[in-house]
Image (tube, rainbow, N blue to C red):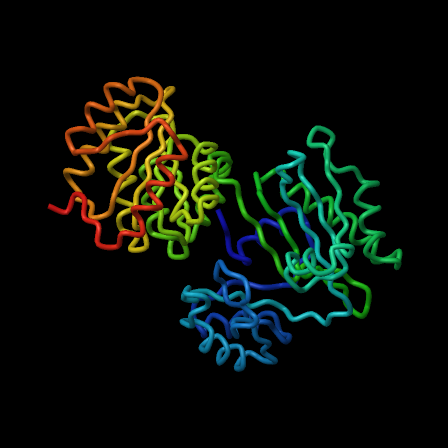
Length: 385
């Protein structure tokens, strides 16, 4: 789950990370009032879940409250990469002497938290990694021992030769790591982390992503979810207890198990096509979940074929087959459907699928190739009636 910058800064504030004064506004009048309260030049920053806000005109400096009102009037309501700006963060403007990057992620290879720091702050870390990877310093942290003070100091001194600044930075790195671990984050990032001409350090930006699986432990963070910024299909899927992520391809995938879902998507790409989604129905054998899954996928106009890939363990193949039959009869899909069913009660499942003239293969490669082949038949109507 993504949260806005102003929300990430609320979490950072609880851990004592140094932040410029600022508040969120939803109207130009509120922006003016906040600027008056701060009493200094401010930055007015669009709050949307996309990067590139500055380049799109969503971040501007206001020298006084009246100018903050005017700038907020311009930014509120504008669209940035398809998202409408409904909130702005009005925050104190700091003079910048240098910019750095501080971040914590989970490294799937080592299965450990990794702290990354770079003196090349203020731009996308992906760009730094691609063009000048030597500017990024990384530290894998033992999750049992946690980040040690000496490790944070070492990282700080890799960024700054000035002892005063390095000694201010190392506690921030420790606090950022604590923020990451205690809130089940998948990402906690400060970019840029700045120094001022008089030698102070400040987190002038903040980004936090939360692992959805950890949200049950953090109801206060769950309440920060911005439903307006999320795909409607993803919201519906979550309500139906489905794991769903919309992608840009045209092969709709309905799979049980996250690992099998990823393998299915990889195979689709291997054979030259693109998946339209990640969708894991989980271990449930409830046919209604299959109906819900197909209903969500069919609303995507890019989907040209639907691929079921079911490995029946806890999930019973015959119940999934019943769900497919229910869905076909209710939704009358006008795109081809291919099915792979193997495992528990697969023989019963094959007989059930005969009701809607579907056959099930046991070969994963075969059904993926078939789905891709059928997706190119733009006029195919299998169940349109």
